[in-house]
Length: 208
Ligand SMILES: O=C(O)CCC(=O)C(=O)O
Image (cartoon, rainbow, N blue to C red):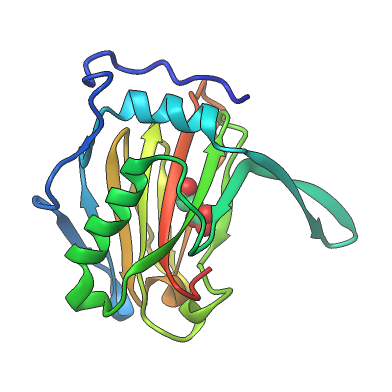
């Protein structure tokens, strides 16, 4: 089982609740991409971290890279459309996001991909979620973050200045518009002592 997160103890351990989706700060990027940040969306983030660390069947994966097979530097678990999510608050989160973004997105969020970053050696390399419809269509990927804050970097595919966000324990970060195909994002490795982090990515049907 992955290491527990040393939480804040000020986080209302035991009471897991979503705050309203208000006070969202939108940043417009180039080419019709944008990101939303809602700090402190989830209360009881310590408790949810511990529940997910224990209840989720985390898997290490391997991927081919050039002529080798390498470990994916994070643990993963994917919940498809019909899979029950590992905690009821994640179902509530998906419903709240679907409701809030319905007019703009035009469809609900359906799947949940979970990542566990055990320490600063775990990371996700530069990429956009373009395995599915995100390659050709505007869409959204909504990420609930738990645990140690890690930089979440964005850069335009055409080159030029990028941006650095650092969503923290219980924060919501949403990438929308053309973000998946015109920008890339990454959680880089860190040499500093870095606690564990869990991210929960909600996506619509056919976006990977
Ligand atoms: O963990 C994150 O915040 C980002 C994860 C991500 O980019 C991905 O799984 O595609």
